[in-house]
Length: 146
Image: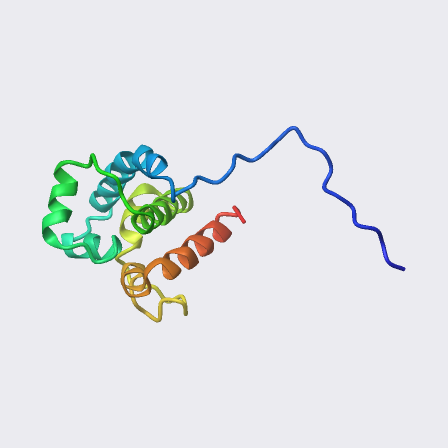
């Protein structure tokens, strides 16, 4: 017996629309705090500049140090997306583990088959945005957020 389509029940909660990263004004609004947050995460994880640049998509030295000194600029969609994933990963690690382990976790070899004995940092550097999305989903699932 087939059932008729049942719409979701009415709710007072309406999720906000997704941020339009194609809109330069939206990217400008988010970029300064995104960069400040990224550099704070890189410091907490004690990342080498080379690793931090790789997480940003292979940024060269000059722009990297300029961004660190003066984060007032408009990032492109790719860099904002990367920083968003890294922020979610950072948050999930701090929920799952104490601060000390959360800050070291990215640089510890990991036996999860996904990492193949490598560190999560190496996994992200070689896998780019798809690896960031996968790691974020894994951590969110572990903390019961999915």
